[in-house]
Length: 464
Image (cartoon, rainbow, N blue to C red; front, side):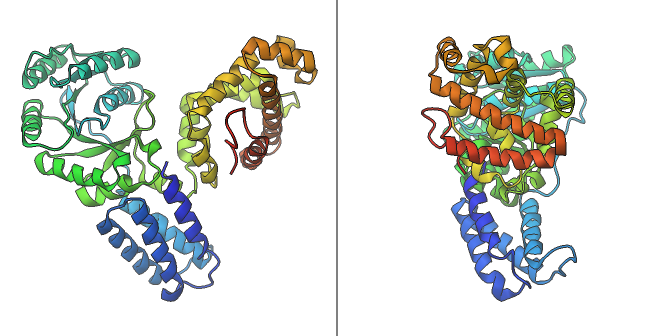
């Protein structure tokens, strides 16, 4: 996420990290590079000007802390201003309303409204423990109604049965009455989208807003549209009393223009961020954490939350206890580790949140990673219990049998064993010295994997 911007800014800020003092002369070139990096990231020009002016003013007027070098102080100011540009504090979803609290989703066609409705419903169900009902009022695209119904079954959240022959306003009224009668906490209304903003669309969504009286009106926008996202949000904001923005497909946005432009241009906070096409809960937007990722400082708080939500704590404790006792890390442990990592969004989801790992995660964003996980699991499943427990006995004939059983080449079995041995080393470090040594070992593991060339067909997939 935002890899291009991360790469440019981290390189630029390294140039000033060794300076003895912050002066107008020695930050002039750095500010010019920061400005260029932001413009290339498709951040709106007005936002870039305001951002660089604030950074310059604070940098020249600040007293350097005793614990920081002038260069570090400058980076701290850049981080602080990135946070401010994206909205400052986290803006929580507002559900303080007589049930059902209505959430209206508006936006252009293709922005991801219907998928976001399901992801938001899953968030409300899992994180807020709310009884939620979804309804589609998109009568122009009946497939949208079918899509929402299918997604509702996937996330196990109720969906009101829309009839495309009815008017959107009538469907909204019926769904609202149904939600009241059946004591739903929240009603999510998925409205129709167009390829461009038009009067008819705005008139319809205004009527729907008047009928449903939503507590939250979210503009859903594709992050990959860059600063155009902010401009479109402003157009919707002129027609509707928007309360926030949902930024979708943020994992595919290597630039970051939308995230850095929306709040300053529209005055509306980004409340949620959507990552990937998989139906997982929307993530609340944390400006400070996103700023940390942009500057390649990592996002350890989000990583810890992911671990708490997606890992089996008892299994993890048992594994660490076992390793501390000096027992071997086995292929059964490795398979369990792969399952936990997939729940957290795969290797990319993990590495993207570790500090100093930006260059690795950029090259991990590929569908090949999913294929790699599937191959690894298939190979481990093809082993006997004895082989999984004692990897050292896996030699020539056993490798051939395992490869045949998994439907892969012997070369892939060899690669998996090498990956496993590196993982074994990392787990020993975890057992001896905790998370700091384990992270250092992981960086080394990624470099070594790059040297191996990854799995066949993946090239230098893990290379820095």
